[in-house]
Length: 476
Image (tube, rainbow, N blue to C red; front, side):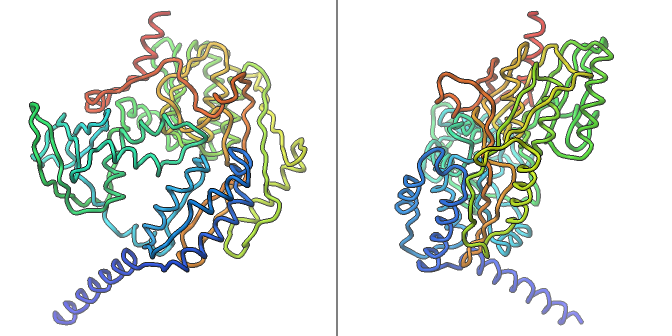
C-alpha cells in the first residue's frame, strides 16, 4: 500500500510537471500565429468601436499589417504579451487579451511567485514600503532600489505602460497604477526565482540577490486606506454608507462597483435619509471602482444632477466575421433589438435619458473621490458630476476619458490555434460633455483637489483624499 501511494504521488507530481512544461514552454509556429493574427485583425477592423474613431479604418488596417507581424515561434504567454503591446493603439480600457482555458486552469492552480515586498515607484526609484514576509531582513522599510538585474527600474516602468489599457489618452493614470503595482507587474511578466537588486544606502550602491516567494493569495496593501474599515463596518459587498458626524450633516457613501440587485434600493433609502436629516454634504467615494452596470450609475445620477441629461450609445457592427470563433453574439443582437424598440435612435445611435428623481433629490455639496482605478461606469458618474454646481472632484486622474468609452456588452473571440481570447466591446458610449477644446475630451477628469501620496503615506495607510475633504470643509 505504501509503495502504491508513493507511486501515485510520484506520477501526479510528474504529470503536473509535464503539464506545466507543456503549457509554459509549448510553442506555436509562425504559420499558426499568423493564422490567428489574420482572424484577429479582420474581426477588430469590422467590429471594434475604436476603429473609425481614434483613427480611420485604413489607418488601423495599415497599422495591424505592420505591427502584428511575427517571424518566429512563440509560447502562448509570449504571444499574449505581444498582442497586448500592439493593441494598446486601440486606446480602449475595455479591450482585453486573456489566456486560453487550458492556460487559465493552470494559472488557477499555480502559486503566485512574487518579489516579496510592497514597493512604490517614485520618480525612477523603487521605495520599499513594507516586507510581505515579516521575518525577511534583506530589505527594510524605506530602502531605495534603483535597478533590478542591472536594468534601471525606470526602464521597467516605461515597459509596463505598453501593457496597461486605459480609455483614450488617460495616460496619467498609468503612473499611479505603476507606482502601486510595480512589483506585481514585474513578477507576473518576468516570472523568476530570484532577482539581483541594486540598493542605494547612504550614497553607496549595494547589490543583493533577493529570492522570490510563493503565495496562494496576496492583497496589495498600497491600495488600502484606513477609511476602508468604514466599508466593512457599515456596508455590504458593493456599497456602504455612514454619517461622519453626530449632526448627520456629512454623509460618506462608498461604492466598490455598480453591481448587485439591491443597489437601487440602497440609493433610494440613502437619499430619503439625507432629505429627512437635511444633510449638507455628500462624500461619494468611487476610488477603486471598476464600473459595473450603466443603469445603476444612471440611477445614482438621477438623485444628483441639477437637470435632465442624456447619454448616447453607438455601434458600428453590421456583419460579424468569423462567427464560429466568436461567442456572445446573441447577447449583442438582443441588446441592440431592445435599444431599437425602447430608445430614440438614428444611424445606429441610441439616446438614453437620465431623468431626475424629484422626490429625494440632493442639491447640496458633493465631493467625488476618484483615483486611477476609477473606471467605466464609475468614471461616467464622476464625469457627469464634474459639471454639477457645488461639486468637487478629489483625488488623482481616472483611467476613463471625458468623451466616453467603449462598453455596454462584449464579444469574446477565441483564436483557433492558440485559443487565446480577445474581449471586444460592441458600443461606444458618448457622455454629454460640452468642451470647446475637443482634445481635452480625450483625457481624463482633472481633479479640483489633486492629492499626492508619498511612501510614508502608503506605509501608514493614510487617506489623503478624505483628509483633503475635511480641510476644504473646515475652510468653509
